Length: 296
Image 1 (cartoon, rainbow, N blue to C red):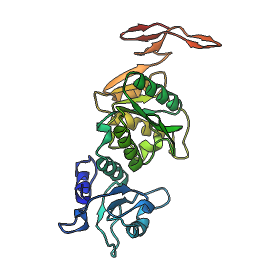
Image 2: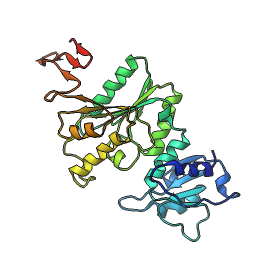
Image 3: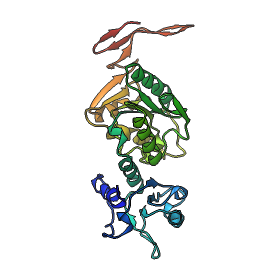
Image 4: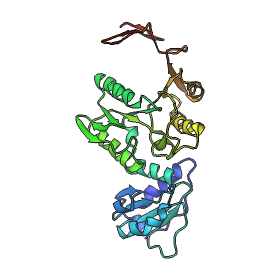
């Protein structure tokens, strides 16, 4: 795929606009070798996307990216007069980074089932359980989360709960190449707010709960929940949205989900436990579902 082909793919992204591209004969006719937001990782044939952060505009690092070999710059700010490579202005650099990354790695989420799990507490436990269920069902499952990233028997140190879009899409493509038919992913509020997971086709979403957290990043609890809600706004209408209805925020997610599946203990839910028995050996209960009860 050429640099130009990749940049023209942005025209298919809802809500994203870009400036015109240079004509034939520009460096955009060359092959794209990568997409990055880190000027230190730019190389010959790469697209450098200048993100606007809380403290700095990544466009100030464009000269370093060009010196490292970047063949095109994508930014929200206009090009300096002395820029030596094509400079494309977009209205949302983070959205552009997510979709350029997905396009460059040929949309791996379209080649496997991706389950996104969000909430304040319980994401890691839920992700490990879901991954184990899929593996037991004969669907090899990759895993990305706070504790580890995993492809089959290979485990990697987790740098953050949900990495930036280029690393995220690259890792999912490795999952597909490694034979995974599914990916279970912890989706943090930071990742949702910063659009790292935009461009991913989720097969299902899970909401665990919402408690007070991350208010150093989010303005308030409403802003925090709005980030979590984005996962369910991104779900295809026929994708199941598994929602903790006991949480006060659960009902509003049911309202926006195309295919809600609720679970809970205190409120009427699609899936709920029977009488709970606590013992020294663990928790004992039966599972009540619309398809009948499942014994202990």
